[in-house]
Length: 474
Image 1: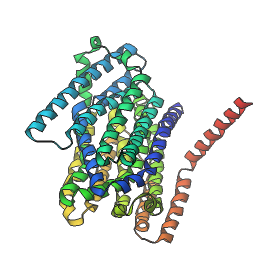
Image 2 (image 1 turned 60 degrees about the vertical axis):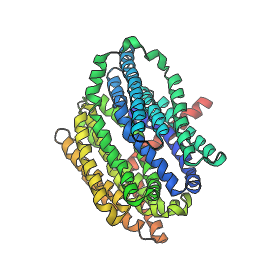
Image 3 (image 1 turned 30 degrees about the vertical axis):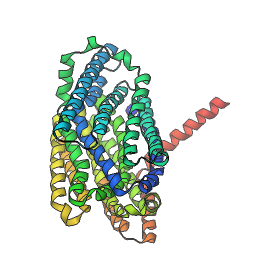
């Protein structure tokens, strides 16, 4: 029970910061879609996409290695200083080399918005390291606050740049950079980074050890990039930058779902790694996977069922075509969530090569379908290829992991969810507001009945919390 309580507490702390962030971002979505045209929004998204591609190559995935190795040495300050100093100083060298190479490349062939790529990626390298350092220390609250500060400061700078200064897409670039700077300042002071950085603690042996875990994650992250965002590049090539802006808006709603998953996954990864050698491991893993599937499937269905009512309010009419992509992308993200939850076993076992090979398979499927279908079915090719890629990846990891570890989702739960998912698709595209409202009611009832045990536990904790507050006030 201690494992479940620790997991729930960790998740609650991380979730608070993320929920506040998402609320602010979505309240400002009407502003972004009214001030920026589809081409400008598409340009900004493409540059962020390039940054996501470059980042794992520049940082060599040392941020992930830092967290994984700090878990093993939590509480041992000398060892933590050695690991962090080695990785931090190495990343300074890596970032400098990246900027030099980009300048040389720009002389050979001019790179669009090169200044943004240089500064933003460099800052992202250190933001990611410092965030994982917070997690490694067990400071979930610091991690949550930093994520909140990053998003909120970026949003504030976006409003200033777009509304008051009227800087358009270049204002978004500047706001994104300033948001990262603010985050680095907060993390540096909160974690007292200077106490853990020493040139004398830099060890090539530490870099070598971490590299053996981290380097196989580079092709994995590149594969994830292909699965997640290569759609945008293929759309730009075949359909144009405006279509990319439309697809970007359709991705905003699934991204809320994924951000919710990312919070849970941070705690889940840590929990699996810390308790992987427990005697009742298989029972714990199977029970939690069923709980997670119930939770995430109902969250997915609730977002889909709300779209007919929420979309017209939040999104400008210029982006109305993005509505048709949301259902497919939401179902794709549900499979992505399950893929991520299963991959924690590979991380616990330090089988980073397994993570990479399964991800690469999905990337090949996604990119191939994108190229083959884009001219035939337009934007649908991007969403459909993502759905098929994540479904394939889920099946591969599910059967691979269950060869040696029992980590299965309850069959009845899986069948009911998939049946409702198909029915919800028919309702979503019906264009009948009455049927769509009935669909929303059905999903609400299903969500309550499916998660009744979890809801009961949450309510008990809330009642207990308020009783404690009442006792203290008396």
